Image (tube, rainbow, N blue to C red; front, side, top):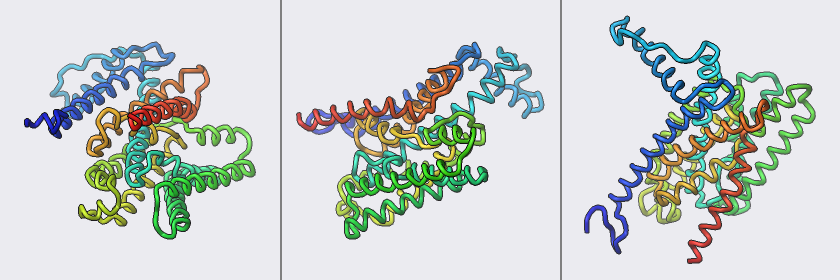
Length: 368
């Protein structure tokens, strides 16, 4: 038996790892190409090649300045006009980078929660984290202290997670079960949504009503390079912890007893990783508002390509989530021009039938 062939002629671990490497490399290339194309989509009349030439100009110009003019000795001019430069690099680029960061973070948060709770329906949106973060964010927006929005979103996300786990533990007599945890999350999410609606109904007036409503539906309009820094900063710090947990999550797939037998401190690890997903979700929701279905659908789609091992699922979910939200936001800003559609509406409209299709395929597979 070779490294590339397992028992019964099935691909072995080495072949699967190589296949995952190729798929991941292809996903990264598609992500870069998607970014160049998405930056060109819109009324500014620029092409992807113009975007690439402009990016090359800025990179070489930066190196020219850093080296005091020693290298490169000449910098090719940008093909974009001053207005096009502003539209692309100050308007579209931070929005695109923010979308990619939020999509990547939501996808790996969903994959981690599904593994920890052993429930394919678990994701930050369903377990109340997004609703709690929205409640915290709307509260500070209403109070006029938007600078505290990331902190409030994180605090709301963490409190919602604590409430979900406390409720699930209470109805399960101290023992968390996946099904009751999801039901507790639905209850907490609905409670947070009701309080949020009450706060909006009694406190928001005038044009701010449209702003808050758009944020609740999930939107990346108005994001800046600061927003992109928050999303990618959270992804770098917290996401790296989640990405490194692949082998531990594989142990959880066999149940708590099996995980303990493999040397995993189940309770401590579960709380640590759930707290990390709450932190990541709070940071992402503070950037984009509540965006559903990305954390639910993307991990399922990735598993159909690379199987269920989380050392493969997590990095590919990161790339796939970034690409999905990047294109969803691009469609949201052009589909009903000159108005913009909240991207959360598009992700729900696309995610619902895709999730139904994945469930149907899984059902046929189990029946076969």
